[in-house]
Image 1: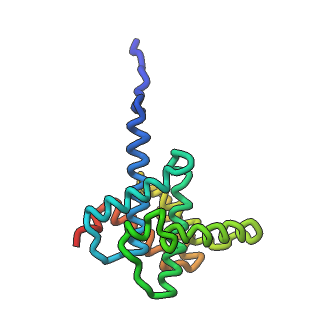
Image 2 (image 1 turned 90 degrees about the vertical axis):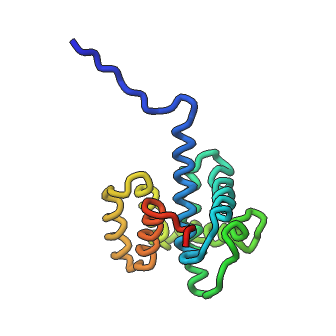
Image 3 (image 1 turned 45 degrees about the horizontal axis):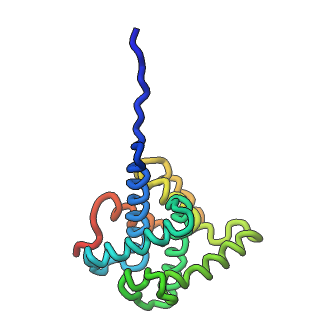
Length: 182
């Protein structure tokens, strides 16, 4: 008789958790890059600094990137909407993402809180950014899942073509190329 021994794939010292957190930081960076600095050259050094601030944000309160990730994505998408309407350019990512820059990422908190408050009373308010954040998270570890098709279908229904484009760009950067290289 053959004895089946369960395979423990989790690292006892938390290495898998660190890898997952690194993957979320990298994914958050790629969404931010695609949304706010697309087609601009960003050096590897600048990318590293920007990712440092993203990690600080994602790990700030809970030491759990998973909980902070959707809010980060939504705040980036809100900034993208504001940037698109104003047609202004942002400073380099590490400047904009710096926690002490009150005109940068930190300023998106108020808009995000307003959106969350409105959602309490109006179901579906800013549903596109909420959907993108949720489906982007699902697609990070496995881009071939049905989440890709579901996201497309839902964003098309909402007539959020620009968000669909950002979703695709961010996933392409994450899985297929490094956007910091010109």
